[in-house]
Length: 469
Image (cartoon, rainbow, N blue to C red):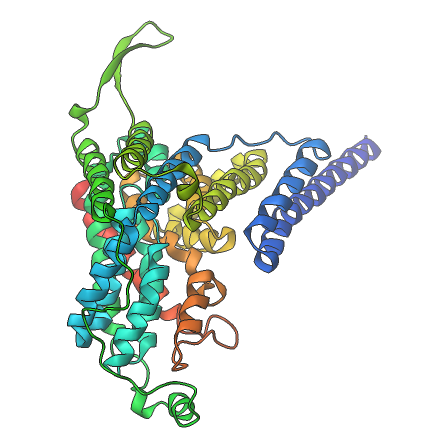
């Protein structure tokens, strides 16, 4: 009997050892695409994620996770509308408006610059418009002899944080789609995310306005100035004459786009304006269901794209030539690859994952923000991180209100901004040398405003959600 017990214990330990090795292999398969993506870019991440999922399914016999097709549908719709507006000249129209306003008030650029980034990101649902604002913010700040780092680093943080406050941003709509059945609504979300992100933007801008040495005291800038690597600052005119004329319907395309945003906000706040249809459950109980905003938003955005193309007489080829189309395609593919990769591993160990999350949230709900922050940084996608974490948090019993309040933590995808496309654009644009990558990335110009804005947004969001939910 004693020998039988020893044999049973030995086989049990062996089984546990095999399970442990299998789990380690799964984690390695999950991490490899992230490492490859960090070195070779998002397309490499997408390809290796597909390879990892194939090995998990065919070799380890794990059940593949379902792709978030609803979120992908929304991303494509918003990108189509944004590309149509850009092709019609609407983006350039907005950029010139912002540039003229900033040039008229150069001494206030540390606050005005990030505020324009926040506003345009919220209205357009994409941070890509920041690319065009970077040289304007640099030119205006340098002309006023203000350290450009203060504006550019803050703007880099804001363009990611503001996405959580946009009714047409993919991360907002994905979060709403996952939590709508838990008594969440777009109206409730915006009542929290808009003021939280706006307050975080203003406070961070005011703090960064005094960050770093003034240009007159900066040895690197003085060296570049003496060596002729940068021209001395000169006043910027608010009315530039070297710009090409805008297309005739450029302003109209922007108005049409923002009209669509207004329609989405109104339908999100007032669910009674959306149609309802009768339903019958499996138990024979009849009721009604209101059309979800997950359907309304892409329908409105596709309609906006179509109206802009008709009214502004755009050809498909012109819209497809817009850079935002390529960016949007990568975003959609990332949303297809990363959640499936992470979901395949998580679904295989869902009980353990739920237990871990429940234990963490039992200590403090603030750990949700920490997990979301680092998951966004690891995956380098706000949408993918939300799509992975929210279902687990819901199943662990976390209420929608606190999650909405902490949504600003998803800006953790900006943790390594120094090597990101926005960060590199700021560094290359800043000829004074004030905006730095840093010797080990985290000590560069972007870490402090990113962390400060995220912490403030989460703190304000948690306070506001107590009154909204």
